[in-house]
Image 1 (cartoon, protein in one colour):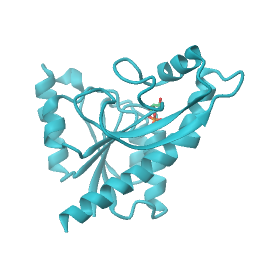
Image 2 (tube, helix red, strand yellow; image 1 turned 60 degrees about the horizontal axis):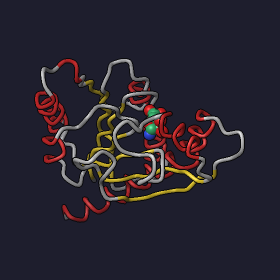
Image 3 (cartoon, helix red, strand yellow; image 1 turned 90 degrees about the horizontal axis):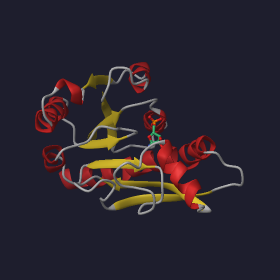
Length: 201
Ligand code: GRF
């Protein structure tokens, strides 16, 4: 069994998909033991509490440097014996120290088909605004490993979603979340947790 931490910043719908999948037995090799938020106002924290999952808040603005923040983040993860980190709508930057400590053990959900509409500055609604502005007919979501390059790590899963006439960024975001993100992230968490669990054996 692999201890999983889910890192969040906002509403936590991806976290909810993970919690629901866990309760439905769809993540048999992993256990969500910590939800760590970048701010104390993240509604995702309420979702964690409703499922009796431990929570923590580690705010970048409480630390004088990226390195001090990284150290605090890693210490919190170590205190909870975390083996796999899942970024679910997490908006803080992870510095090199975090990535080194959890090499190939951090995964992220991005709301586009990487390499399109990804990298620095592409997050949340901005991703869908860019897809609509470019006029692509297909978008989707990607789960990938996290490394030093924003959205640049090895791709684990992708799912394509058709863009429909009249889509607004908000409507498109919701469709990509419902039909791609919430399906892919639990599936990817189980794939990686299973691999890590087998390596432990
Ligand atoms: C959404 O834009 C989603 O596409 C991205 O993170 C944002 C918030 O997701 N992955 P959540 O509801 O906090 O999981």
